[in-house]
Length: 515
Image (cartoon, rainbow, N blue to C red; front, side, top):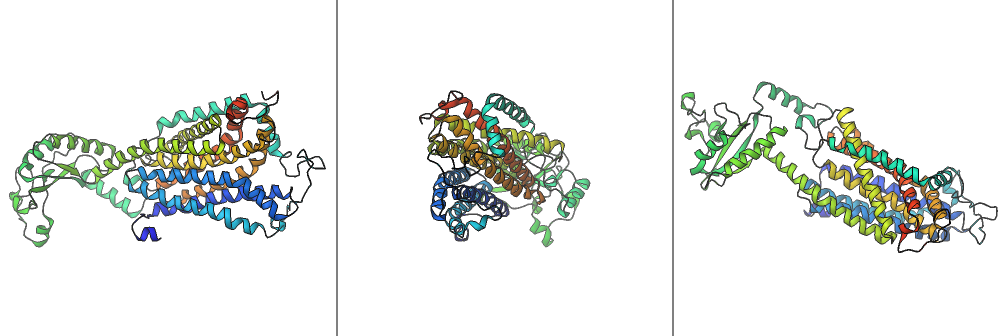
């Protein structure tokens, strides 16, 4: 609030809505990770405080790394040209930082209330033998038994066919990314229902020429205005009807009754007489250009480009082209710039953070590669669903960037949770068993967290704006894909296939079967 009050941050409905969803989803992830690890440690410690400290030490690195990755990715939005991008980054980054802080400070104190908070499945202390097994022959923590133990065994035992098949499926889905239309949405197609404004726009389009309601506005030196208008009239897509390219009328004069009432006063081009036109200001005048196409159509962007090219060739005119269609084009260009600049920076920053956490070069690159493949596969599915199921007219130009930020930053979370636990296990056991134990220990909690986060973003589906519905669907589907396929099958199978090489320079032991 104080940052927004003093103009440091810009708050809008989009950033506030996404902030709420992001904080609830990420906070639930961090809470589930800590609570699950605490439950596990209660099997190994008779007193609550040592169990809590062991759990806190086990999750503080992955939670801090996860939060740092998301925060760094969001702050990269500050590199963008669009204010919608620049405002979203720091707002959501503050939310993630506060969430991680609360989950690592306040939540642990609440967990000390007693074992009864886990009712009806209250964890009981089971003493472990020196080799790590319980006196009764099991772990007592659920890691060596249950569904996820069986899944982990299958993934390790059949690692090659699993990563090959899952990889091929993801690449097949990613191939549809080329069909995604992210070149903007006409304003009348930007809602999931038809509000009054859209109905009014349709009535206007039905009775007036397509570009009449939002003409281009050209500012040029007044002494070169005739040459500028002549150049504009040669551009395809500019209306050829009389009065389409003129010096703008002065509406103040019209309102005061000073304007001429005689149609004969109009010149041969259909423009208002000089007495009815705006007066030059500092030697500059304003021109209005009616287009033959709707101002929010892709064709209008081409017209704007051609008009700008035409007026730039008029010597001494210093002409600038604006208006709603020009604003749309500039937004598209800025979104493309933001995408091309921010996405590579996010990948570099994320790679550095994960590399510092895992301290393993190849494992870090494999993890990032699986997340990127998951992201492109999600875009492919979005293209299919948006085009053939929802029948959307397109996507906002910022959609790929927002989807990338959320999916990569949040998708990396679960892989960080998995790989940090795997690293912890392989440092005290051989490689194959360590991977299996890491997957079995984190499978339930990560899957639960993924489902919760996906459901949280799916809530955006009730918003009547197409761009937010698209972001909600993309993140929800992408998180589920990453949770159920990438983290469960592809990543652990690849790491098992690579063996000790994946963890270089960390030295790990390897059984003969995993060699």
